[in-house]
Length: 306
Image (cartoon, rainbow, N blue to C red):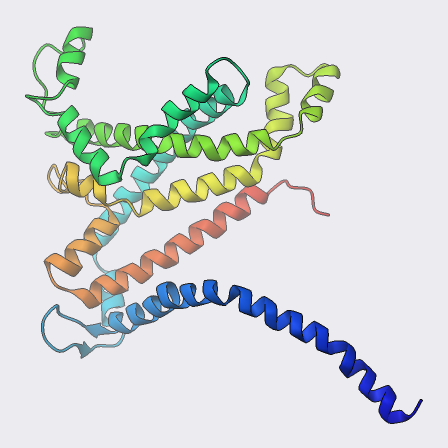
């Protein structure tokens, strides 16, 4: 074998590998195009907007980091962040407190279990705006059914305007969100429960572990990834909450229910400060990324490393 032949052989062997690489890039090209068009380019344009004083009408004016400096000193922005954090904690706990028992309930094979799963999941298909309008009607002081129901149960004597105070309005909004979202979280948790091998539970039962110990030491450790997905989706959706506050209370009473997305909307499309709204949007994106990273790290604590 000559020297030229020996040098050309590795190149010939690498051609199929290169072709497979090009085929792989070709297959993922549509997804890459969607990510570039609908995420990367909008983020870059939003960053460019955030560096300007950008009115809805008129020419934008470059101001550098002025919008970010304004954001760091905006007390109303911090107030919106504080309310959003409070809402996120309450609603996430409420959703998991209901969705996990429901997932355990419908995971077992019993009579009419398919009907139960369908009934619990049905509110998920209702749009959030439609659900908000529906619950506004439910809680209406004159035409809603909540007042007659509470009066029949003996909880209230007079008609109550649930949207007149922060506590009652916040309770109605949380009740609506849990009613709508718990079924979706239940399906995700149900998938994780069904992926757990039944042999592990049977082995633990034979070894003397009761139902509670099997849940703590077998079910929960094997549900880490599923719970991480559910938690990230729930927290992200809660931080980005807008429709329910805009439709059900319009930020009231006394502007106490203005979420961070609602505040960004007001600054961008009510006050026409599009550049400042873009800066706050990027700030919120950074917060979401950091929270998601923290959640993934927190749920991996205690996992065995290979």
